Image: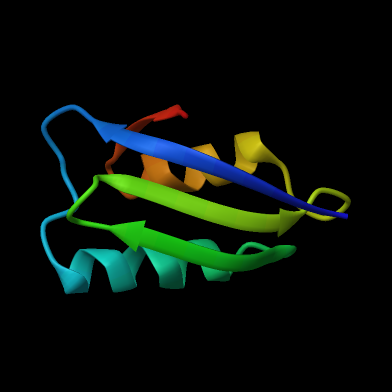
Length: 74
């Protein structure tokens, strides 16, 4: 079953450009079960669709934090 979660980027490290958006999409796309990633420098939001049987919200959050982003669920 596909689940969608949206995170807001907080703190000093922000999504600045299309390169940042691509970096986030590539990193999260390597998480097994992640089906779609939409990162926006304009809104400072990351929306992720994933198979809840194969990936978890916590795993996705941890990957974003590993990239240096402080996030909170929307």
